[in-house]
Length: 226
Image (tube, rainbow, N blue to C red):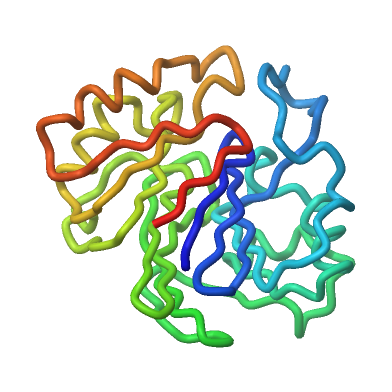
């Protein structure tokens, strides 16, 4: 059994055959950096009672929230996975609960296969993406990125892709990315949270109709099983 729940922006809860993963958890209602137009499905981070992994793509505030990540990790004893520069933000977490990664690495941790992909996001110190696999189910989490040649090697059940533009792929870039990779389904993310990333996810879905990949546009809090 596998499922992915969109929590808003680039935050997801993923269940891969019983392994519970939070991707870039960020639930701040009123971030000081920018006006948040669309709120997270998670109203109180302390409502999260179980997690095996917290996986973070890079250090920017809307992907790496020290408060939310620390609260989840302290309550659940989850392992935090991310680049060294990102893990440095979680000062209250013991080193043994953190796993530093680099682009190109692939390893198994507690039964979960984790492959660390490149990400093209020049504004970040060391951005990455991830392919997560367990028991024949797989998901690609792009983080913040433009499309890149190595996407040709991505073969997964579900791809989670930014479409908002402004330092990431826009709709057209995400469509081109989908055409590069092998993915049964594509779920758009990282759009409409701020003024500068306003776009129409249905346009993304419409542009994929003639491809081998089916777009799944989720509402915040909605779950897709695959």
